[in-house]
Amino acid sequence: MSLVVQESIVDLMQKAKVNLADLDEVKVVTGPGSFTGIRVGVSVANAFAYSLGIMVNQKTVENALKYE
Image (cartoon, rainbow, N blue to C red):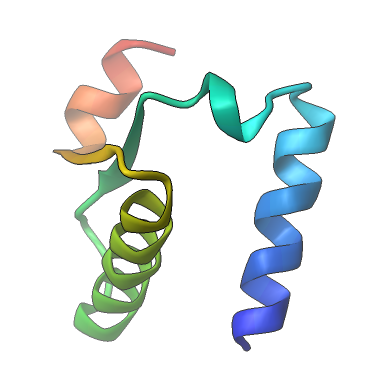
C-alpha cells in the first residue's frame, strides 16, 4: 500500500507541476470519514511533512471547500 500512496503523490505533483521544494506545508482534511481512513491519511501526511521538514496543518471539510 505504501508504494501505491507514494506513486499517487508523485503523479499528483507531476500533474500539478509542483516540485517538493515548492511545498511549505502539508494540509490534511480530518473528516468526515472513517476513523481508520483519517488515521492513515494523517499518518501519511505527517511522514511526508517530516521527511521534508515542513509543517502539517489540519482543515475541516467545510473550511477546505471555502477556498476552492
